[in-house]
Length: 250
Ligand SMILES: [Zn+2]
Image (cartoon, rainbow, N blue to C red):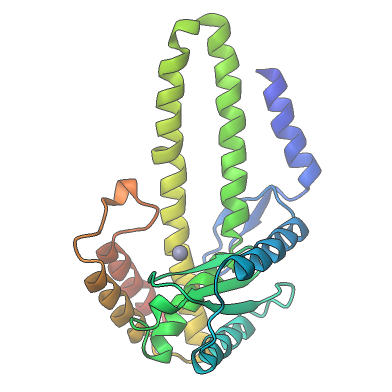
């Protein structure tokens, strides 16, 4: 057991940055990956994504994505991020962010995000993930949860090998449903909150964020998986939360 605590400690010491504060919400985060590692990782994955997916040749919509993205990125006041925005061909109603400030929007999102305010809602949310270094945080939590799992395995194997399999099934489920999924949902809310802050800074219509998520809820009607098994909050939970956040700016 001692050995694993030492491994954990050395991870903390070598990476140098253990606890940091999330922007806007001020939440304390455990991050074991340096900003430079994160930037390099994002740069690499962004290049790969643009190679693997078809970049949209719709110049008007691409310009719209990039312009909205740059306005919001400017509002972050974070020049240390290398903000880049891309529009790629996909029927999926989606967008995602890569570490370090790379945001990818799918063309499938455009019919839902018709107005600039709606599109800004999604892009600001993704910028929120990047700004709060959610990818690096998830990797760090996964790392710690992995080391803890290995340590427990060694301890159980020594004393009660007959329980090892049961433990691993329970621990695997516990780590997924008890740690990683709630973590993802918490990050979703935080990205929403940072997104609203950025939209407000630029001067977008905050009420349109609610309209957008209501439209998304209509889109995915019947496809909502239960919150406990999902990385995302249910649409209604998200809308309720956004209303509370927006009220702070009134
Ligand atoms: Zn998200």
